[in-house]
Image (cartoon, rainbow, N blue to C red; front, top):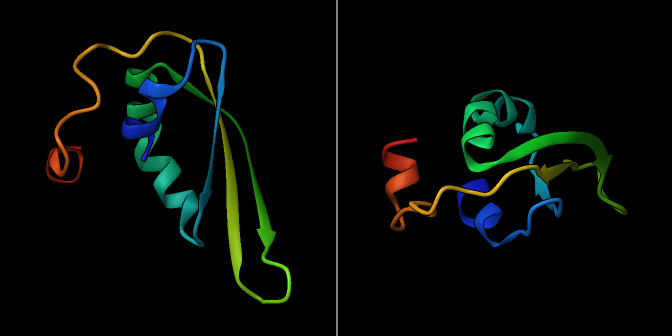
Length: 82
């Protein structure tokens, strides 16, 4: 998700993602990608959706440097070659 969204964010801007219950695993796997794309994890906060017992995580990322011009890659590439 970061590869598609961060190129659209201005430097010093923010990107907020609503992630599912496995957000912690995704964050661990995506740390390198965030750095390459110019992002920095600022905060992640777990919450329960109102009226349900479903848990989600809000992830706040700040764009600290410009994203290299080769991103985003063609659709499907990030999944095959993370």
